[in-house]
Image 1: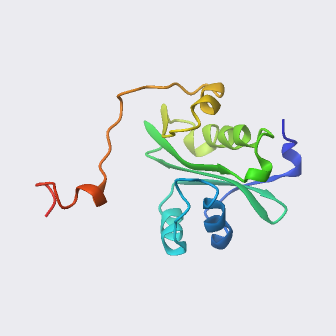
Image 2: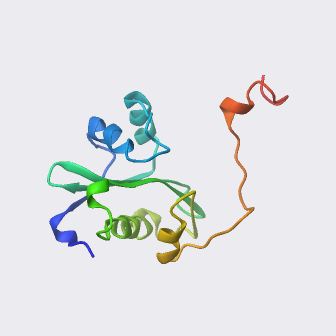
Length: 146
């Protein structure tokens, strides 16, 4: 288990964008994010939690929510050099117990490769619950898009 006193958690959207864009390279699904898009993403996120080892970004997660019924957790990434120290559990604990999210009744997240990790934290696996719209893939073939 990580010694959380040695690291600093920040609850702020004010994050060094260069470090965050670099941090996204550690996620197979987020490697090609651009700085301008990451800036806009942060501005429109409701909660952003970052984890720092002095001035080095080592963990990140963000949430979109209505603050009552639903919250979706996105972009949970721990720097590879800091994995397997309990930091993912700590950052998820900061998210779930965030003061702004106390009234939220249902948290949601999407993962295709970290199910075991989240199950250990008490998350439940529900198949066939979700659907998604891929605007890039469907924009030319859907009659509902002009």
